[in-house]
Image 1: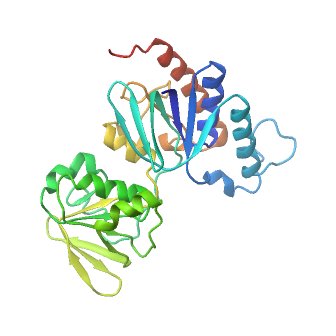
Image 2 (image 1 turned 60 degrees about the horizontal axis):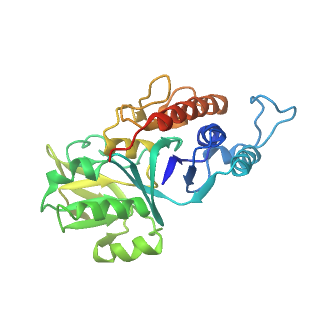
Length: 294
């Protein structure tokens, strides 16, 4: 068991870890892929550098700093977070428990270029199998995505229906062997989706080749799960797709914190680092005062 699991290894997540590690908290950082900061060729507005530094250099230095202080860093995709007394974080290749979790997952998902997708949100289009799966008992549903997160959502929906199709929206499946094997029982449609439509509620998916399929519900799980995806499942308050936190980076769920671009605001490295520092301090206080139920 860990004292804290930090999801994301960008400026906010690494900054928080520097505080939790120096407070002797057992800290695990889980991240998959590179931060968007990797694309920054020159950074000239961050304190302490006489000459411009690349995003890659800054990120790599931060990771080395965390490792030097004793952080465990796992390159993996988190697909689910659950909370009872402890948090259970499920990734593609392992399950971890912790007293506290920090969401530092960066920006929200890119908007899907599918006609009417927004129109049917809450009317057949959903972003949370845990929240809405119950409403689709024995109905025909689809999961839009091609990575482990989509596989996880499809498996969750099995609790309510066996009529499940994974729509990759023109992409090839990109899943770990464990999930690839588990989804072999589902139908996979790799066609590019042009639009969704229906009268009052979602009824059909239309593809770019002119064909269509009837469907009762479509669960969006494209790309990897974001902080907002985890937030929805846990009952965290969000606003305009961003996680709502207080001045100490606390969410409305005890023991769950968020920092960086996933909380919105002024998206700058210095802001993310500052929010990570505040989150780190809050996590230290929480872990030291948290008593497990026995």
